[in-house]
Image (tube, rainbow, N blue to C red; front, side, top):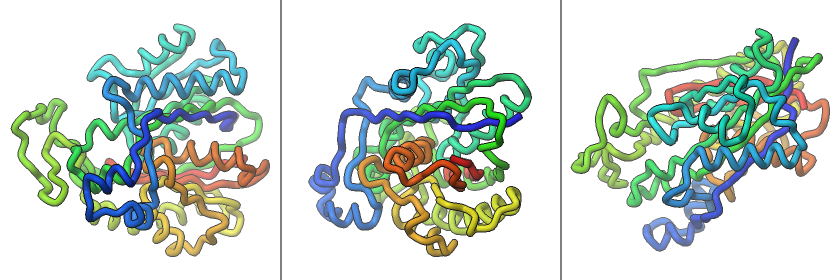
Length: 332
């Protein structure tokens, strides 16, 4: 027994934040400089009253309508988000009801960021192979913009909001292959929102922890240097081990889709791994880094434009907040 990715749909908020708008606030960051360094020209941002759950619902409804999917056949819902509507209950339970899924549908949230889609595929495959479910709705939804300080010129240039809905279902032929996963929790402080949960409550008088971008302990903080170091140390090894686990060579991989962190990191990894540009996805231009949704967004776009064709082997790799990383190979 195995499984496959059948369909993907994604939804982006209507509001667009352009480089020109950011440059108006931060004159030392010209639109051209942002695009050249980060690889982003514009990104979508949720409205004040719009949440990750709203984006997740829209992505799922789009998936159902575009692919004539019968909701009654969904028997498990996995929602990856670090932007829940409430501490409790889980957003997946609310989403089950909003979508009108059967009450016999299992549903759970998991809190993971940039590696979340790969981890979600691993959980979905496990549920199917354990005969717990046959059709799984894997949803990734994030609104990091709600955590970013308005004066943070670094993170505001990188991150965009968005959601993706992926149907993973039983297949006679294995199309989601073996996984390589990893965690290093010692680096948790390098990408964090320190205040707001149980350990440290939200503090109206929170201290500034980054003078450069005026980030307080209530805001998203990212140590870019440490994240870069982590990435270049772990991801080449991750790719190597994923190939070994699947008994494949690099030449047998038709395409590589990595988490779209930023242009600089992606360019470095591609060159380090000696992957040709025509086999490597690098396009944050109109969405920015949408965290756990970057990989499904890429797969959808690459499938729609004909880059990914039936029979191709594609290596997926996610990495970031946690610190965590994960990779697998899928067959289109």
